Image 1 (tube, helix red, strand yellow):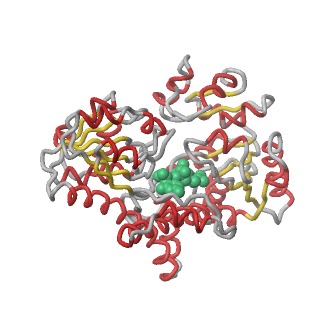
Image 2 (image 1 turned 90 degrees about the vertical axis):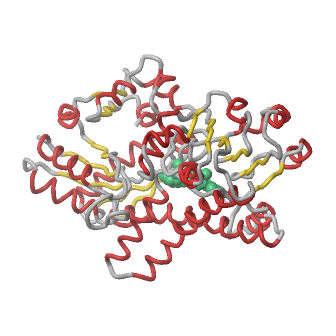
Image 3 (image 1 turned 45 degrees about the vertical axis):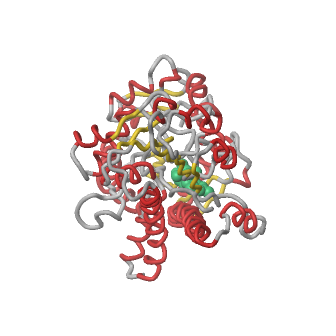
Length: 446
Ligand code: UDX
C-alpha cells in the first residue's frame, strides 16, 4: 500500500487494522521505527504518510469511503478442527467480508491480497452478496509475489502483476481494468496479467510451491554432496547454467523459512487431498518433509561433531531471521535448530542484527516444547556478536547476513573454546580463511 501511495499521489490510501498498537507504530513520527524492517520502506512511508497514505483504526469509515478495498489479513495454517496443521485459517477473511458487507452503502471492488485457497473469492462474494445492503461487489484476486528483504525493489519492478476477476461479465472486466490502471502508473502493461479468478488464486500457491521445491531439491543434493565429496555450490552452478533450469534459488541452506512457503504448500496439499488427489498431495508434501529433515539433520550434525554431547556447551547462532535483510522470524530454521539443541541441553547464544530478544523467546514458546522459564534459561540473546561468540564451543550460521563476513574472525577464534567449530548453514563464510585461523569448518553441502 505504501508503494501504491508513493506511485499514485492522486489516490488516497487508508491502511486500517483492529490492532491499535500496530497502527500507532506505523504512525511513529520517526519512520525508522516503523514495525517492519525492510530496506527502502521507511523512506517511502516518510514521503507518502500524511499526504495520501494514512494509518488508522477507523475501519468502518475507511470502508465507507473506499472505491476499492484490499483484504490483507493473515491466513495462517489452521491450528484446530478439520484441516488442522494444513488448511488455511479463513476466519479473519470471513470477518473482513462480513464487515465490508455490513458497512458498504455503494458499489465496491474487493481485492484478495492475502494468499488464499482456490475458490475463496467465491466464498467472499457469497458473504458480500447475501449479507450486504444490496450494493454491487466485484471480487478480484491480486496475489502478492514480493519477497521480504527485497520487497520495495520487487514492488517497484515486479516480474509480473497478476489480477484475476470475473472476465465473463462487463462489470467484472471493468473492475479488473480499474486495478490494472493503478499498477499501470509504474508497471509496463505487458507485465500485468489478467486471468480468471481461480487461475490467479492457484498461481500464487503454485509459484511458492515451485520455489520451495527448488530449495528442497538443492538441499536434498546437499546431503548427497556431503557423502560423495561433491560440492553443492559447484553442482548448483553447473546446473544453473542450463537456461532451462536457470541460476536463481539454488542456494543450499539449513532449510527454507518464512511465512509463505510451508503454509502455502500445506494448503496446496490439503486442497489436493480434499479432491481425493492423493498422489498430487504426497508429491508436494515431500517438499516440506525434505525441509524438516534438513533442519534436524543440521542440528544432529552439530551434536555428533561435538563428540555426541552439547549438554551445557555454549553454541552461538549467528542469525535468527529466516533470511537476511528482514526482522521476520516466522518459520525460521533457527527456531527448529535451537529447539533440537535445547533438547540436548545446549546453552544457545544468539546474535541477530535486527531481531529483538523477545521475538526469539516468543518463537520458542510458540512451539510449546518446554516451559517459558526453560526457554529463558536455555537461550540468551546478545547485542554484540563478539560477546555472543565468547567462550562458545561452536558457531552456527543460520541467516546469511552480509555483515558476518566482515567480522574479525581471529578475535572470535581467540576467545572460543578449542577446538572451535563453525557450522555454516548458509554457505556464506570464507571457509579457507577461517580454516587458516584454526576453525574446524562444516559447510552445508560440501
Ligand atoms: C517467498 C516468495 O519468494 C515470494 O514470491 C512470495 O510472495 C512470498 O514467499 P519470502 O518468503 O519473503 O518470499 O523469501 P524468499 O526469498 O523466497 O526465501 C524463502 C526461504 O527460502 C528463506 O528462508 C531463504 O533463505 C530460503 N532460500 C531461498 C534458500 O534456502 N535457498 C535459495 O536458493 C533461496
